[in-house]
Length: 395
Ligand code: FEO
Image (cartoon, rainbow, N blue to C red; front, top):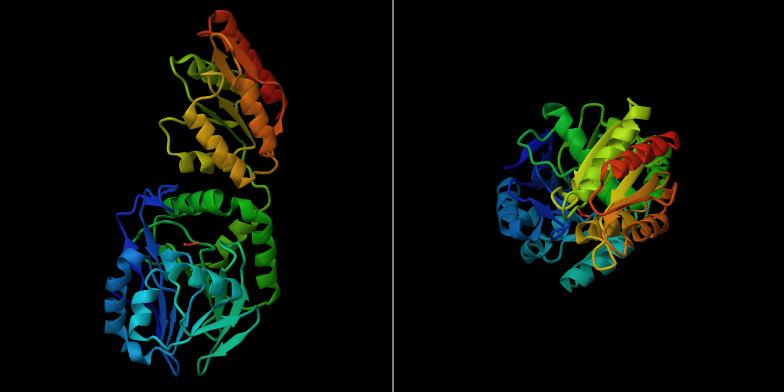
C-alpha cells in the first residue's frame, strides 16, 4: 500500500516484518526492516529505487495500482545492492525501454548482478534531471554504502533521497521518524552505523560536508531503510557527523568466551577493579558465544576501551572470540584502547594472540594483558581486580 509523503510523492516500498538476518547471515535485524521505494508523480513520473528480490512481484503489483507502469518516465537506481535493485528485473519486464539513472559504478554493478542491457543513463555529481516543475539533482556517494551508491535531491519539495545513508533496519507501520519509539529508532540507527558504516567514517564526514556546502534546504530525508526523517531531518545528519569522528562514550566493554567459567571469573573481577577506581564509567560484559555479534559491535562502537578474553585452546583462542575479532578488524575502529585476558592450563597463547590481533586492528593495546593459571584462585582473583584498577588508571 502506498503512503503519501507530500502531494504527488509516495512511499511504495515494502515492510519486512519477518527478516531477522540481513546480508545473508551477517547482520541481525531484531526489529525487521523496510525496503523503501518512492514514486514521484507529475509532468514526469519517477520511481526511485525498488525493493529486495523476494518482494519483486508484490512490489510491481502494488506499484501498478498507483500508476500505469507505462507512464513511468524514469527509474532512479541509487544503489545496485539487491535489497534496493532486486525488483528491477520484474519492473523492467513491464517497461524495458525506460531509462534507468545510475552512477558509472552502478552500471558495472547492475550488469554484474543482472546481466541485462537496460537503457542505463549514467550521471555524476551535480547532474540534473528535469521532471517538469522540479529537478532531481544527483550526488555520487561512493562507499555509502558501495562504490556505486548515490543520492538525489528533489528541488522545491526539498527532499533528499539518501539511499542507505541515514537508514536503519527497523520495521514500523509509522513511516515517519516523529511517530516511532525514539529509543528504538536511535538504537537501530547507531547499530546500523556501527556495523555498516564505521569503515567509511572518513568518507561519511567528507560527503556530508560536501552536501551541506550546497546549502540546499532539506525538509525530508527519505532513506532506503526504516523511517523517513521529516521532524528535524538534519538531526540524523548531525549524529552521523558525531559518529564519524572516532565516536566514543564513557564506556568500557568486556567481551569474553569461557569453557569452565575461569575466563568469565576473570572478566567479572577485572570489571570490579575498574569500577573500584572509576565508579562512573559504564562497564558492560558480554559472552561472545551467547550474545548477538552485531549488538556487541554496537557496544564496542560506543566504548572508549575494550577488554577481550579467551582461554587458550589448542594453542589458540575460542571460535566466538576469533569470529568477533575478525569483524572488529574489518570495521577499522579508531581511537580506542584495548587489552586481552584469559586463563590457561598449560600452553597459554591466547592473550598474546588476542593482543596482536587488536594491535593489528588499530586499537591502542595498553599492556601485555593478563593470564591466570587454571581456574582463578583467590590470589588470581585479586590479580584480576588489581589489573582492572590499573586498566582504569590508564583510560
Ligand atoms: Fe541497503 Fe547497501 O544496501
